Length: 88
Picture 1 (cartoon, rainbow, N blue to C red):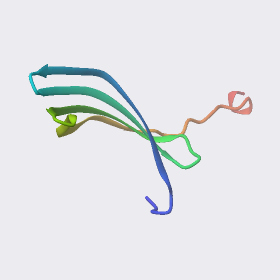
Picture 2: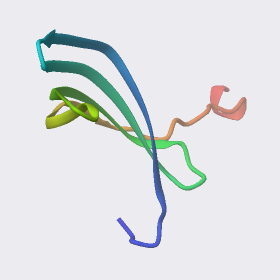
Picture 3: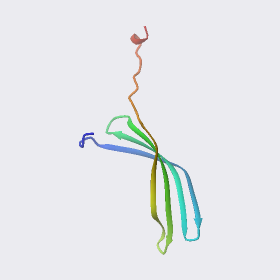
Picture 4: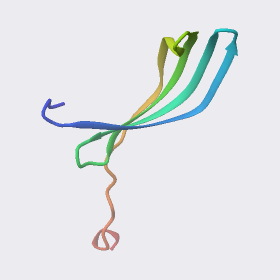
C-alpha cells in the first residue's frame, strides 16, 4: 500500500456487555470495521472481538486492559455492474 494514500475507517460496535463486580468490570463487545481509501468504496472489512477490564478510580471508571482479537477479515473486491450489451 502506498504511504500517500489516505486511509479512513468506519467502526460499528455491537453486543456491548458490562459485568460489574465491585470496583472492577469485565467489558466485552463485537466490532465491525470498514477500511477505506480516500474517495473509494470499502476495500477491506474486519470483525473484531473486544474484551476489556475496567476499574473504578477516584476519577471515575478507567480501562486497565484491552484485548482485541480478529474474528474474521474480508477483502472487498469491486463489483462489476453488467451492461445491456453484456446481457445479449
